[in-house]
Image 1 (cartoon, chains in turn purple, brown, orange):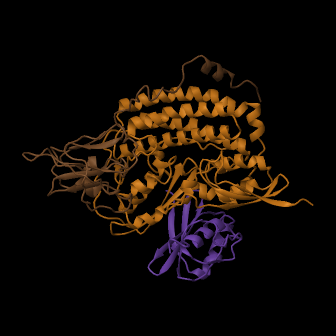
Image 2: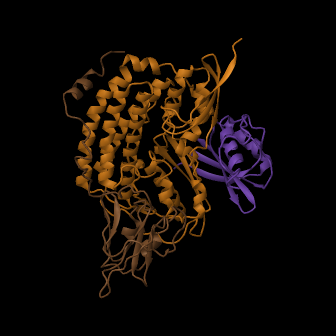
Image 3: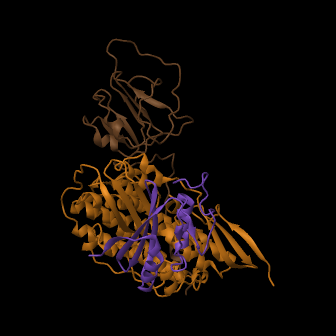
Length: 111
Length: 150
Length: 359
């Protein structure tokens, strides 16, 4: 059976864990943001062949998250989306649209 | 790489009849299961309101006391939830679609009155906005009696 | 020293089925960079979970997109069924597989028609869509709708296809296969079509892996991965091979999608011969509590459905990561270095479904 595991990590170890996965041949599947009470839950999903590994971290409102786009190039698209819809600040993205990716009438509509 | 790969199809099309139908001169024949519009056999209806609760868009409004069943045809998404949940099986899904119109009216149906004359309502219904949780029954006051819509 | 100019592409363009905006930075006729901007069809469907309960949300999920409608409903239902621990009957699994494969065929035929239209071959576009009409008629006979089917529910399917209907469909598929073999010769062998497609938009296997490409776009670059191998619905019982090509240009992507149409017809024949008798739904009680990440192979690639429930009738979060969303960064990379006239074809080769991307 193919795996589908979830692991909680702390925001400081994010870059370290992600680098290990990139070295192991994983690909980035998605980055998802959920609002849970006063904090945000970020779920990073990585895939190797058909297995799925999810890393979860919780950040308080306004806390900056490091971008993983210099390790996984396609991450900039997901990080721009969570910034535009939820208002989570992401630092050091390789391609930063500064809030212009999603054309919505109201800024950060899912906040 | 080759040329003239499409010639066989072209010649076949040149000498056969068209794939399209001459609609609306020739009316369209819908298959049996097509979800067109909802109709209610109002004499058998017990006004329990289950269809109204199950409707995802709030297109149906049922009033048990006044014995009225109202539907806003332009809010209906033809999902068949009402038909599947009706305990008396008086709701059914017919095959023709609602005709285009210039305003969104709510059609109200009452069972045939026993002794009183048919009422005439002068005003039109206010437009019911689409989507959201519009599950309350607005006081519907337009088209009357057991008229079947088409 | 040539000057750089910026040309806006979209959101209205004859070749695009749905609106996306790209700012193309050009040096003479060559594209140097492409900057996307999306949000023209953003309907905020993910925020609707707060208003619609989890049973009604199936109708919202299947309206995310018109082309991949069935699989959105199915992916959402499978995720919620996993959270609630509901096991659907085997016949329902086979029915889901058959409808999925029919969706895949109609989506690929739609794409082939749009590709032919993109390089001006309108009669080929019409012929391909004429074949597609037969599939839409089959959908109407079995589910009641041509585009939005409303047959998925949590716990199984709402309608059944009896065996006489299924065998009738198999005869239609025999006719479709014959017609398609003739059209395939035009797509793959015709000189005019080949000049527009061969050697264009090359994406190497390593870059496809690094930029996270999915679906036929990725399989055309040589990576053999098909999410159907996970075995959801009835795919665990069926035998099939992954259709790939090693070349990685637009022609390879066309070949992969045509191969997938023929593969889908074979899968439907297998499923119809093995479908068991029985019910098509089980009753479901209670509310879901928990979370799950479900992956489904849509015609455009791998879609991820994340559902989080908290024990009440409203869900906490539904997130759909669609294949087009994952394919936009590699597409931006293939656009660099091409001529301006090739940009529409390159955008079309990822099979863009922007309503899916923006929800």
